[in-house]
Image (cartoon, rainbow over all chains, first blue to last red; front, side):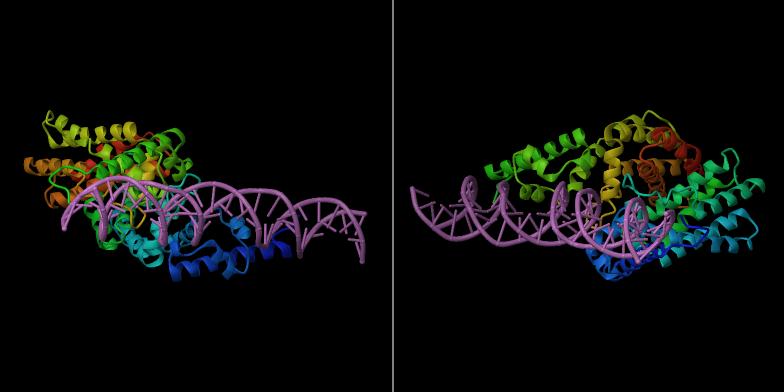
Length: 203
Length: 203
DNA sequence: GCTACTATTTGACTGTAGTCACTGACTAGA
DNA sequence: TCTAGTCAGTGACTACAGTCAAATAGTAGC
């Protein structure tokens, strides 16, 4: 078949088609909102066909899930910032604030709502609870560090604590989406973690 | 119009139609699963028409949301049981266990998943975050009691703590739905609250 | 260059949620 | 009892996500 990294013209074209569909969809979602965009519009703008769309995306949701995942990968930038802070508690708080600010700015209400809704569909790709998410690795590292330094409790494993903490983070996102963004996401979410959840985590 | 509580024949018939639609839908959902039932089937079994369905239910989701609300009201039975326990902590734990057992048995995965998904639709009736839910009143009462007896922290208001605790409860439901019920709902949910969240609540 | 194969693309088609202009039966008031 | 008006109910229709058999065009081997 293909040798090494080289792609045949056919494969290159296919990648282009996918890219055109992805960009067309994202620009339409941005212009009109997810619910007001049809697949027919997406493929018209991409200059391709409906069948092609469903080769590259299993559902309409999946476009947004992919967008979410792309943005989500940028958490590694946050990870570097964390080194400047000395305690695991500080790191957890800085991460929380960064996560909330970042999600609000880069994703926004509609992407978050759409992704959360998609996750409740049986066959949809599980993006937000994927343990490979960088976010989860960061949280797990902070917790392990906090357990080592004696800041955090160690009667539960770091994996288990990570699962619980990230569950609480998701809860803020879900609540905000259910309330149609009618409360201050960053303020409320930060308060929830810093004033409430942190206490469950500390020794 | 109508005098006192008396209903015209017309209004009685209308209530009957709604009831027939509701029962027809619930029995079909139970038989084939929510996603495999069409509105046309529902109205056929109810012996009425599609238009009638949409007079009584704004969306297909709403049937399940109403079912959820009916079941949800049965929390008042739990409330009475709580009086037997002495401390607010005990009450919170008994409530948690009861809630999880109850939801698992009476609602099940599909109802929970469907309701949670519906809540992310803009115009859907907000059932799970409705502050009038009996569950929230019970939680609030327990928290106020705990604050009075000095068991629970009082640096945050009981309302705020209620909001945070119930957010955590919703988180278990959401996670379980996203994972398609692939972990032990009662076991995991109870552990999350008793081993983790309770510590955030205690003084 | 020719051929057989296969990856990609197509768009007509299906299924189903939700709409709406219309119908006719019931009600209230004269 | 008659009638104007209302309200519950109807079902053909629209809109749109998702499917799939057929068509097209790139590729590899000769």
